[in-house]
Image (cartoon, rainbow over all chains, first blue to last red; front, side, top):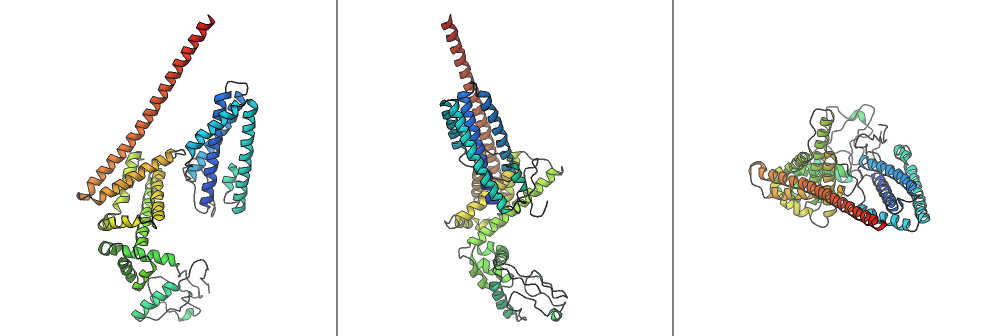
Amino acid sequence: LPAGGVSLRLCSTRVALEGINKPVIDRIIRVDHAGEYGANRIYAGQMAVLGRSSVGPVIRQMWNQEKDHLKKFDELMVAYRVRPTVLLPFWNVAGFVLGAGSALLGKKGAMACTVAVEESISDHYNSQIRTLMEEDPEKYKELLQVF
Amino acid sequence: VRCQLSPPQRPLQASAVLRRVSDEQKKEPLASSSQQQFSSHPTDHQPEQEPQGPRPSYTGQGGQESEDYESEEQLQHRILTAALEFVPEHGWTAEAIAEGAKTLGLSVAAAGMFHSDGSELILHFVSQCNTKLSELLEQEQKLVQLGEAEKKPTDQFLRDAVEARLRMLIPYIEKWPQALSILLLPHNIPSSLNLLTSMIDDIWHYAGDQSTDFNWYTRRAVLTGIYNTTELVMMQDSSPDFEDTWRFLENRVADAKNMGNTANQVQSTGEALVQGLMGAAVTVSNAETSRAVR
């Protein structure tokens, strides 16, 4: 391990936790995990309504991408020993309702919802990247690459 | 000459004073009152001279100084560790701390650094036990990774971890109920809760828990319940080597495991039921549709 560096080996369950700002990393990973989980549920809700329509395959494809993102954050969560948010059951329901609700407004509604969610996620990740870069780009190199 | 001053850590006025007091009692030559214990006369320092006080120190030819100053926190840790040996006799009290300070060659006034209810002593002890447990579990994990030991099934692992941790209480078991009640005082609750949750999290981590959903909370809550109830049983256990306690622990862990299985069974039964109903509904609606078409 480089001095003070963090080595992320996905096959092991742990990362060297010394030298990193644990509270900041904790919050970042927890929030991002919650976000990806919510996004998953939004697409699930949209699929429930629009699954059999012409836009179904598009939604399914985007949903699969989100599933990959969620899996990635699951791994990070275990590696950095971060606890998941206690609001998961809430995001479960809220996400599904938002997805289904926006889908009931029609395809345009569903797409508008998706665009809005993606934009805000992207802003959010950018500010997290900035936080990590300000602290120490070297230390967080691996985490930054995930973003 | 390296200066050991560093502003964030209070360099040792307190312990320098305490040491001087005990030094005076022992009529030993005083160290200089500043942090630079061995100052710019290295040639005066006789190699045969034993280091004064409990801290090892070394001075070389070039006037180099050792890292021989410690922070107040480190000193407090040493005093509390020394005090533990007097707990069975004096309880978790300022007397035990004072005795501990004496064995380190410090004045009994050192006990004044701490609360009179023995809170810090108990928290220090708990923290030490948790660290020991972590090291133990880490060692076990290494052995398994090297292939020198079998990976234990989860319930066995949890049982052994909780037993190992509770066994650390045995030397202090007479006075432990007192400690528990002190840990429940409002001003101690944040720290004691913190120590408890991180210990439980550690145990689950080494048990191989990788949940990232609400199970994370359920598992920890269940294990905390098991740990706390077993601890209370242990306080009232008079069987040889606490075998009643370990049997209680075994039963609780088995209960938890069965609950988990039952929950899974309920869920899969529920899912099967729902699918059955959906299938029936689709069949009926198809039948209706085809009848309507005809």
